[in-house]
Image (cartoon, rainbow, N blue to C red; front, side):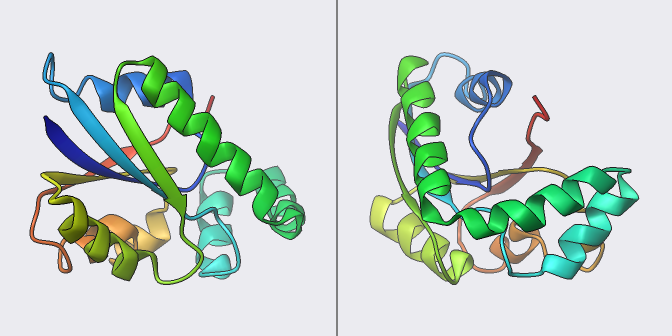
Amino acid sequence: MFKTVLMIEKALSDADVELVTTLHSEEKVSFVVLMQPRGKQDELLRALDDVALGHLDKVVREHDESESGPTVATESLEHSLRHLRRAGAEAVGELVEDSPLERLRAVVEEHQADEVVVLTSPHFVEEFFHRDWASQARHKVGVPVLRLFASDS
């Protein structure tokens, strides 16, 4: 069985689930999902990304949604785990409040993961400065790190 640590920031769409569950063709996959919703960390860089992509309404909405608390994040994580399981994968997960990259390193070691998949919306400013999860993870974990863009649907 192929073990993947999947880092996300929002609930997986059907397209996202299909993408990550078919990466290894017919091989059975097990996921450990780490979810850290977009929040206060690097808020300015994330707002610049949204503006650069022409998502001005998203900047305002995200600021309002960040006040909604952990219940939305918990529901999003549970939704994602259910969808991965329905697609035939094993899936467990957790919310990450602080230090997502430190938690990632620990999870990779605990589960003896084969790879890390970072599935987030584009964050061009963060990526340019190598502050995105995938760029930083490549220096922290001893397994391949794949960067994929999440579906907007």
